[in-house]
Image 1 (tube, rainbow, N blue to C red):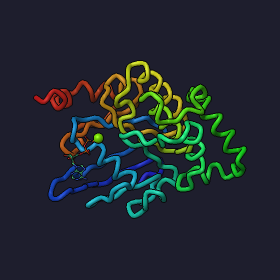
Image 2: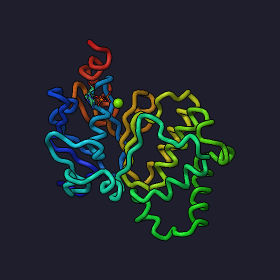
Image 3: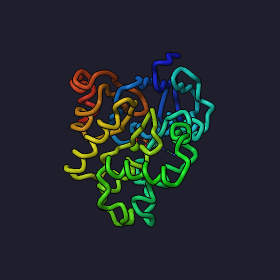
Image 4: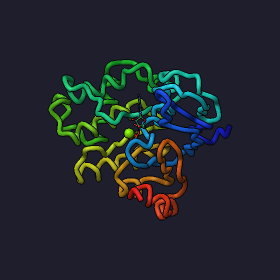
Length: 248
Ligand code: ADP
Ligand code: MG
């Protein structure tokens, strides 16, 4: 397998009681790129995400990270290698403040943060890292607010900040724009682009403007299979892709 590929799936399948949510998928996430997986509801996008990050086990097939077979690795083991994902549902701690959420994320031992932030030991260093994240994500004003009291948009930004606290090299985002208003979508798009510098990002996204703005390449999934893959302009213009989207 190619070590220049951040993640690679070979003949990946996942069955749920006889139904293939993902069927015989070959997929490559190129290192340093921002790629998007699109497709109608139920196409298997989240399942592919869950498989790639070892959240669920494949029924068959193999997964490689930078050329190494990681099919048998656990989710924390893959996170230690720098592959981190966010969830479609917001995952911040409502009864903690924004700052506490970030400090907790910085302390989380399962992720790659431990390797990359090996220097960060003391409480003060954690606080400084949290300050930097607060500033970068424009969350300073609400640092002491309970996360549960934030607007939905701010919660998603906080979630992105906590995911970034782990300094992932490969970041997978499942519908980062879900439920956001136009202004927040613009902000989060800018943040993802910024965060994408020097990283590899895979996102599942319904908002086609966001996909067009961010993604170098797109993969179209339909009924568990990959229908098309390539540069956005090329793929989005294909008749079979348009038909899959409009249900014709
Ligand atoms: P998408 O993210 O593209 O909307 P999903 O990957 O969530 O699609 O789901 C793909 C298909 O697999 C759907 O038909 C869904 O109902 C089914 N599926 C996903 N997860 C499970 C599960 N844990 N048990 C049974 N069926 C599932
Ligand atoms: Mg989904």
